[in-house]
Picture 1 (cartoon, rainbow, N blue to C red):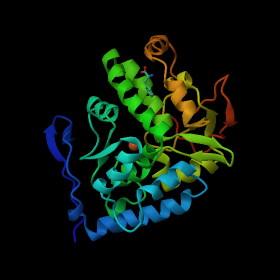
Picture 2: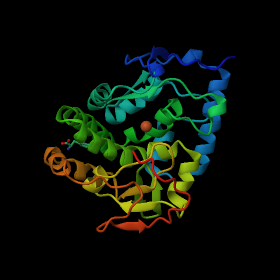
Picture 3: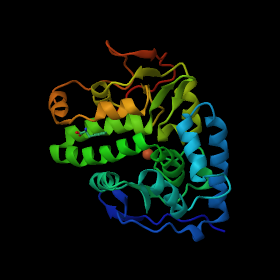
Picture 4: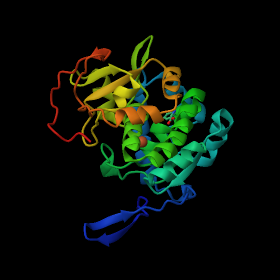
Length: 296
Ligand code: PHE
Ligand code: FE
């Protein structure tokens, strides 16, 4: 059987063909997943679970089990929603891919998490540039079972709507916070550093690199520091930020960001890989193998 084709259309522009994403919520076409699709899920699930025991935070691993995710087949959104809804009031909605910022924020603010319904093709097992079902579902969804993290995500959505109204600089500050927490966050536990960021747990290479490589910096969470820090979209991160717990994250992000955005408007942006005076340094990275340039 053929793997699911992407349903994204392309439009010809003066920059060539660009994808046109549908912002609509779509029903997960579960019966149409092919044997290849389920096999891709199964391969990735088994591989990452094995790697993540002792590397991802326990809340993440336990939540996957509680939700009934397993290597056997691609989970059904409607089944996950029964468990998730009862736990924290979140609902998964199917989408074709990345959404415009405001649509995304509006979903989060209303406790709806958009999940890309299609899964990568077998030849993309190790790397895919855009989020697919595996990244969204395996990576992001489990922590929505945690009441504190679930509240953080909804608050982020409300904050996004606000930042969008303030302007592009505010939005950039907020996006960096998302990047260095929701996507690439580390958490300090009694057993040592653990991963909670979805961009890390859905990647074999970065699951190892983020925790065990001598190259990257590992720095204590600091809201304004993070909001000023550029990041990488095409390589592993040069710096990871470490929270003490989800309560710290929630407490630090509770205040109104409006005065912070105003203050940071004139502040210098920081390179992705530089340790600053005042950083709490868990590890000063060796910088080995880093690409020059390319910070976003
Ligand atoms: N307190 C933030 C604001 O005023 C909202 C927010 C909460 C943003 C949590 C991100 C995460 O914008
Ligand atoms: Fe993501």
